[in-house]
Length: 378
Image 1 (cartoon, rainbow, N blue to C red):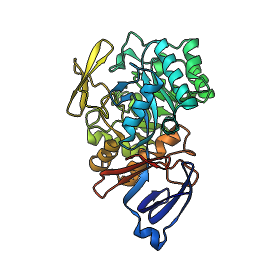
Image 2: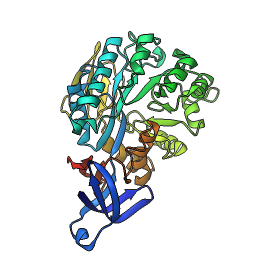
Image 3: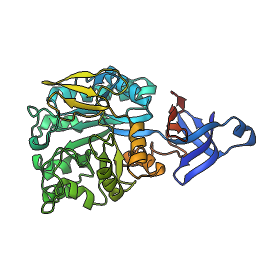
Image 4: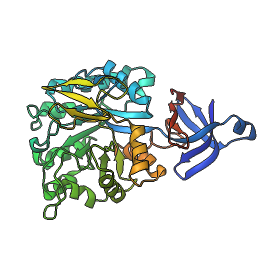
């Protein structure tokens, strides 16, 4: 039995002081008040649940689209683990059918036979496209934006991929398609869309439950047309991802939407490219190149191209600059995305029976330590 004693632990019921966590086989089996002897040996700091990121395009110098392999997934996972991401969905953006299949094969390989330390980090896959809107394609290559084929549906609905998330544009697919995916256990999110409010609402009625990087690459809220943003904000049950890097969203725009959605429906995501956990500054990307300038990524034409954001920085930015409490920001980075992906019984909070994934912060929100399935990795 492994025991970790901490000064402060953020449990579902709030902060608890001088707690001892008992861990077996990578899971929490008991949480109790520390003994006097344990208090003397406790870890100083504040213990939060490990971060859950449902949108990770790359890391450690690797872009998943460019290298859809088990080795690439391992590199990405270990790069993000250093920043507190203990669960993630590697994300394949709009590409050809062969790349989608190879990405699915790589995820299946990791989940079936990968090293245990990697299997605990990878929870499934996110297909961000290719069933999107060319009008709101962002950095996605419009050569590959298309309507679904039977073979692609078969890839997305495979039973060996873990949790599956698909981002679609409602105007590019039918309600029947959404219903079919949902019936197969796929989580459907709305993004890269120029749809009207009514089109988005039909997608919600068909079973879509989330919005991918709210505000960005979607029809805006205006006085005469609520658009996708209006649909997200007016449907209280819908989850919404937010890229809080201060380039994708102004802090006040983020604050408004975060407070409307609340900590139970707002999710922090990175939309991270290969640059996270790497010193690369330039990255070949389809027919262009992604260039890093400070903490901002753009194509040579100036289009935002994902981010070099990590989940810990997303948490800190949300807490420091968006008027959100640390406790609420922690939920947005952990249990809320876990619940969105129907993984809340497995990860996302510090509770008995769950994976022993934690991050330790000091009083200045500096990341001090990371545990993955009870293993201290930082």
